[in-house]
Image (cartoon, rainbow, N blue to C red; front, side):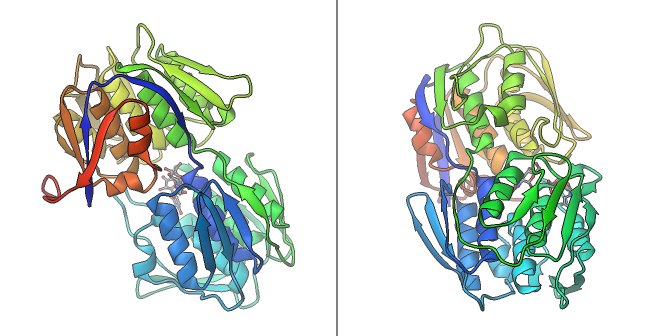
Length: 432
Ligand code: UD1
């Protein structure tokens, strides 16, 4: 286990390249199971979540080759329809194997995912969708045993849950439906860019999907899919995290390359509303970000895309901690996602959390402290706070950040930050 030591207060400037999207890569890698022909996927970020997914695919019997961001996967007939708890427990997103396994093998056994630190994360909508296509679901020994001996048959499914549409649920249904008999209509589909990227990938494999990116997706089942090549979209959450770094008071202005302006709208708009400088190049693939002269507090209400992403609220909370005035962050998607707040408070932030809402009163400065990462985006918030804080911050349990940020320490160093990754011999502050 590693920890990150950050010497705060260093000036940030320069340019970084944004990696391919982790959240787009995961279902796309799983979708490689839909064909026995090879698929080649570029810009897959080298992070532990994509590594786990590739490990699971190869344990199921697929052949996986990876070289500098490009992955080649071939899934011959005879791959296993069952994954063990040991294989999948490290990554909740392994639920997105359900759709492709059902489409390819008409049966699968997958461990039920447990809760996680950002709250109860049910899979009822995934199961409702696969049942609607004609599958039978049983729970046995902690596993979901799902079977559709007569194959999957297209129908209309509404994917809306109490907190809005589900992203991986929409992905799963799309992947299950591409090889189903007849037409499937997904109502209240998630509209995230990662869903659109998956649909584009599936269409390159020969699927017939229309409407991805809108509320209604229509899928005409086909007999067979084939191999293809695909490049994953830029990671909008990594880009957003670096944009926040670019607006910290220690930043002289930084440039991010390989971004997609269209995907960044709610994230960019909020930074501009808070008084910061956000300038894209003409084709929207590069952005310059600099702190404004008079930063203002702000309000976030997380919402499904195109609303403000829940995956960015922790990072903005770190920025608000140092912004004059009172900011409010309400997470409607994961109301328990505020673990970073108590750690930010240890660095001197003034934050009250109540009922899924954080109220942040900006302070003049933060001071470095030993802190503990609790989940992926919470750890990003701690890194941002540490960059702006006075003194040294030690961020323990760095494995959380390694799930989703490719070469974070190298990229921060490129911008002038002083960061060092070292083995965490003591394991950090006491757990639980
Ligand atoms: C994906 C993202 C994650 C992001 C989340 C919301 C990936 C790998 N992960 O997760 O980073 O934070 O979208 O944008 O892409 N829900 C149910 N029943 C279900 C499924 C979900 O009630 O069967 C609820 C969830 O508890 C949550 C809401 O629906 O309140 C949205 O979750 P969902 O979109 O499914 O999140 P993921 O797809 O797991």
